[in-house]
Length: 338
Image (spheres, one colour):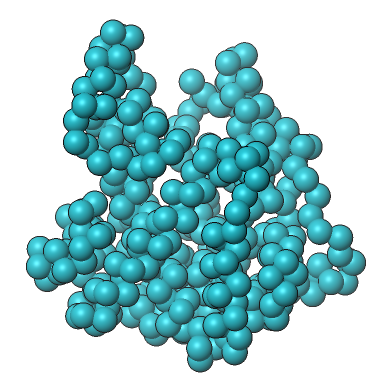
């Protein structure tokens, strides 16, 4: 089924909530500061990671919520519907487009920054663009009561790390694409076969995530389950590595980094009302937060044990990615790979 991503973008922009109240001067100043912070983050990130040295420094796209929705719809089209014809989607595709637009509208208020490896950068013509969502960053820095300049640089350090990860290791984009294709492949099994497989999964000792993500895993074929695990491990590594770099660079470049980290972690863990908990579950946000925590602990321990240069062996290829059990036991990854 081809989703109508143009309709998704249109619907998303119409129903997205407005950002915080700001003057045009404040918004423009924030946009300029974020663009400069993204460029300033590149050198310390490359120095700490030992990745992407010598590659050109592309400019970030500094967006509002509507612009992010447009960019996200374009990216999702490239990732989920590659090579689709330009023919008009049918009624099912338009219904899916409306649903996707609603989800994009929800996400547009939560995303601070994002590196998208699938969308071409208009400036360079190469795949991959770094996006920073100005109103969301302003809203969070106000809520946390942190120094705006420090918080903006801190956010950029994390997102620039993602750009460096992909630009230094081009195979990551294809690896992600192949796993997404496996996850979204049409399943031809009958209802009876699906029920039998779900029953067998419930009785097995296969590891599953908690909440809605674990429920999704029950519905997956064996091939989809394996692809999902690979994507979870990749996401855990990418997010944990970025958080490690943020904290490694932070003390030298972000004067109030300790206060920012403490406030941000408290915000991640704060109690939610029932509606917020449901939305977090449906969007997989709790699984995402767990990725940051588990991934950072893994990267911290490996780097502390063997140093960043040997840690970078992890970027060699799919075979050096951490296995699910190794995320909880970094020494097992060291013994297997190094």
